[in-house]
Length: 399
Ligand code: PHB
Image 1 (cartoon, rainbow, N blue to C red):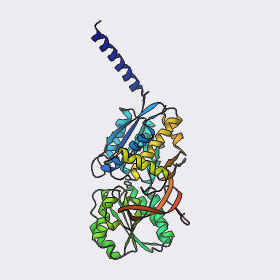
Image 2 (cartoon, protein in one colour; image 1 turned 90 degrees about the horizontal axis):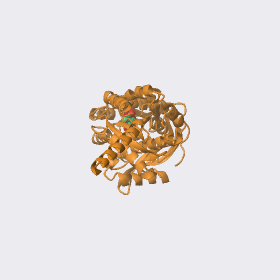
Image 3 (cartoon, helix red, strand yellow; image 1 turned 120 degrees about the vertical axis):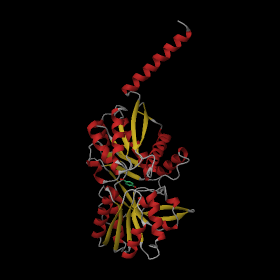
Image 4 (cartoon, rainbow, N blue to C red; image 1 turned 120 degrees about the horizontal axis):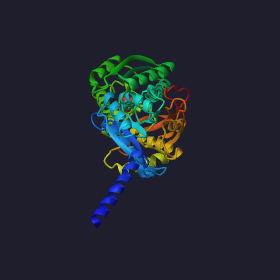
């Protein structure tokens, strides 16, 4: 046999060997990351992935002797059909061990039945409608529910003497949850809702709603819109329509003052008060470590935000599962590990509710302030262990 032939045979054999290992899934743990990476919500996937990269930067991409392989799939927007097809392909063809990501509620809702049928753990890294966790027993959420921030800010606002509010929410799952949770705590505290406005999920024009709110003249407008471009759109219209000038305050969930787009806002955001689970201005050693790692591996990603943290924490959850199962991922066993799991998050302590598989976490009340020339959500009070419905009571704790 010629030397060339021997070498060719040897490398073919080693290639075959590698292929066999890959097919059995023995060497890697595969994670399918389904989210928008293009279109109007492109930053959602980008931020989650940036968070995962930050996690790998600090902890490596190997756990229990296996390498974590991330397979990114772009849904391109808010539609459920593409997300469902991508999740299905990831399960059937790529044989992923975990589904993860899900920026928007319709993506998660459409994909949960696939997790259920295939017994694939599905780690939700954003989609925030409370009922998502009920759609499959293989869903666990590490992000938020919109009810959490909304219930907290309703309770807080009523306690601060805000008497009347108009609500404005995006007209789909997380918006309707936000509206209901705010209404519940705000009216219980003595507040009155004058009007409830719902805006389209895609490309809303806020200006006519702003005029209406101005005419109604409430003490405050409570808002939930999907973070990003709509946060900017809402705040710009609030300013240009002169709501601030007539003393109507903005209160809401932290999506409207999303850390990632806050630097692109102007003084109109100053003083906006929100209820939320994460701020880049959160003071803790974990957050400092996270932000440093984020900046080192994502030099062009701008500022981190709550979706970055959810990607980071979601990867921590996957590492914890892999360690507990010694790298052999089984759907049912993985869910047992996820139930009651604690994560020492950059946002503060987080636990996955053993009953609902939903995130239970500290919610902060924050005010937008300018620090060293940059706008930040500065936390000044907190409610610990808030569940998905955001039903809080009593006095907030000091920071
Ligand atoms: C959602 O679709 O569930 C969603 C999207 C953007 C957010 C929050 C929730 O900022």
